[in-house]
Image (tube, rainbow, N blue to C red; front, side):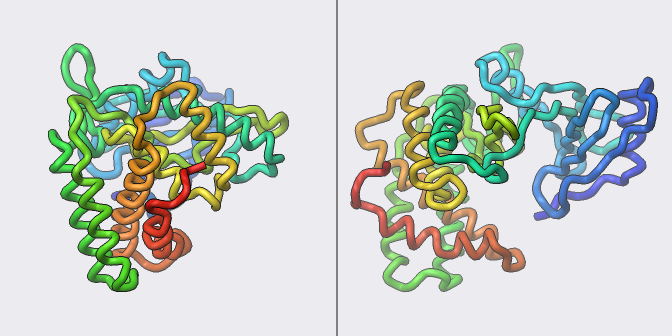
Length: 322
């Protein structure tokens, strides 16, 4: 559901307190509406920054801040944390200000195929670094715990997390957006995905790995990094690759996915059955995403997702992923 908005006056008061020495009052601009994390562009004297808030009253962003810190320490190019308060008195939720990553999303750039491949290979290496960070539990990473600051997810077990996806499967089936022949295949695929063994620690997943969050320099087209860690979760190791595979042929392109995968494999060893596991991840992710979108007004992403589970099911047992 859309985030509960914060009064503009409260946002301005927070920024004035954080930056009392700015020559002029910083210009603050809401970045889109009706989406998940409320984000504001803040024009400071030394450049733009981005204010990210909790989605609802009382929500904290401790985990998101710690994820940025962990990734920075791991050598992943991500926005820097400039300011962070768990309970700013101006707001009813936490607030974090991040730096602006140089460049633009690769989906907005006119890239030659070889340049796109170079960028995505680098992004694949960083995606493997992200997935190497352990999380306690599964699902949304919503807080940190203890002196060691472990990332902790919403569900203590994989079974509890999987239940959300199995419920989504029922929603998709009763919606009749898939033909009857696909219902049995979807049910079988989701059972196979649900049977994946639980691990002592889940893997940190970016949660929204697509071309809108991979940045490159606007002029040189050199890889710049990855943004937006508001969707992070504890998941299976191939979750992010599964999400990227859903979009293969669209923003990434099949060749682009191959480059992303090649970079990933430079940093992470994959199991012998990784191809089948990747397809199951993609089916599970697309099914749950479609179930969520079915409760919203029709738009381009919903139309894209409507055909995706069927297309993904048709790939089971076919030639290897690029």
